[in-house]
Structures are given as structure tokens and as C-alpha cells.
Length: 364
Image (cartoon, rainbow, N blue to C red; front, top):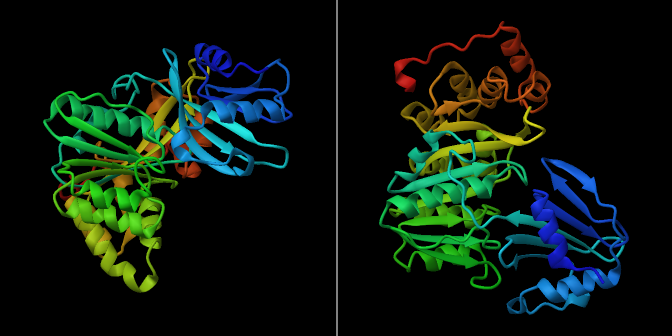
């Protein structure tokens, strides 16, 4: 019989970020971004069934025999919390366990720029952290929320699917709600959060127009909101947000968005030269007066060239971040090129052909 807790404990000691258990296959681990197959007996249908019975919270009230997709949290006491995803596949099913450490890391521990603290100091508005699945969005947001928790006397409400990092009350008080157990959906969670005397809100993900408009309304009524999007870059995030609305409503929406958005951070985790450990590369778009004007006038394609021309931390392209990591010897040239959105530009930067112009005063 497969001993789940023992296997997760060993995987945690091996510094795995994810554990994959698929019916009919050997267990696999993701370590430093790469998948390793474990020499162990293949997972059987009975193992999957037993794991689901052991781990799925009773509050979900699901019928395991008809289950197709589910996200939830499981904890091995004294080891770690795990975000679990079950999906039915062509065999019987697959379980993925993502490690959620007890310790909430600081920006310094995560090798993230101290500039991000700026986003914790607003009294209102909305901040987005974007990136692909597994890019560290939730980890970055937990660090920002913990900064507020440690330094400000606020009420923080998180609405997540499911709750990942657990924040103990420090200077702030923290209320954490999980979809399907504590609240029906993000829109409903935001609606009721506004009646609970919040200062700060974390909305796990913007998935639809209703959630987006609810989050914006919260930011417009004196609250600081953090959320995530799955996009490829900061300007792409603006296109994605605009795309939630029909074309007839986009112009008015952009004017509204420009007045409340404070910044967009796009994050990638890239392999370092340190035995394959992953390091973050960040694109940062802070809403300066110039950027606000460009968004209001729907000149989104003209924003990236502005970011290219500045050396300020508040407007940083992904290529600038990758190039800085390359210059410091943290990543290789090949990695910088592979993870770049603008490969010709990064190649020119590495060759010394490309030079960033100094931003004009109006951009600072």
C-alpha cells in the first residue's frame, strides 16, 4: 500500500517543488524545474482512491467515484502544506502535490527587488502579479502580504482557491477564505469582504469579467487589492484585462483601469548557474503619469518602447532583468535568450550593440 505521508516527507527533504502521482506510472518529482522519475512501484488505481479518501476535505462533500477535477490543501504535520490537484485522465486519475512551505519568505530570500515593497505602501488601488503556472506568483504575493502584516495595522482579507500560505496575525489581522469551503466564488468573496471592514484584499486570480469588475470596484472604494493573471508580460496583461470586455466597452474600461491600477509585475523562474536552482526574472510596469495617459488613450503598444528607454526600477523590461542576471553570472547567455520575449533585442544587449537610453524626466 502506498504510504503518501512518508513519500511526501521524502520528497520535501529532496527539495521537490511538485510531486506527480499518476495511475499506472512511477511517481515523479519536479526539482529545480526538471522532472525526475522515481524508482518505485507504479501507482495503482487503488492507491489513487485511497489517497483521495485520505486527503480530500470532508467539507467539499464530493463523490470520489465521479470526481473529475478538484483543487484543495493537504498538510503533513511538521513537514509542509501541499496544494493538491486531482484530474481524471484516460486511465484512472492523476494527483499533483505542490509544496507550500510553512515559512513565508522575505523578498530578499526570494531574490526579489526591494522595490516591490513600494506596492505595499498604497492606501488603495490594484496590483497584479502575472506569469505562467508555477512561476512563483503566489509566493511573491504572500511575501508582499506578509510585509503589510508585519509593518501596518490593517485588516487583510485573502480569497483563494485554495488558501495556500497561512498568515498568523502580527501588526495586522488576517482573514483567509477558501473557495468551495468558505465562499462560493471570487466575486461573492469580494462582495462580502467589503462588509468585513477590510483594508487590504488578496483575490487569488482574475478569471472572468465579474471578478475583474468586483476587484476594481474594491480598489476604487479605498482598498488596496492584489491579484494574479496568467499572461506573458506586463503589456500583455493590459491586453488580457481589456479583452474581458466587449470591444464597445473597452475604451471606457481602460480609463477606469488607469485610474486605479498601481502596477503590474510579470515573473518567470529561470534556471541559474548554481546547480540548476531557479531564480526570478521580473518585468515591472508601474503606473507613472505617462503610463496612465497611454492606457487611458488605448496606446498600449507604445508602452513597451517607453520601458525600454528607462533605467528606473519602476519600469523594467524582462530583457533588462535577464540581462542583469546574465551580467552578474547568475544565468547563462543561453538561458537569457531562451526566456526572453524579444530574442533579437537580448542578443544585441549581450553583444553590446544595444544601449538603453536614459529616460526623460517626464517618465520618472
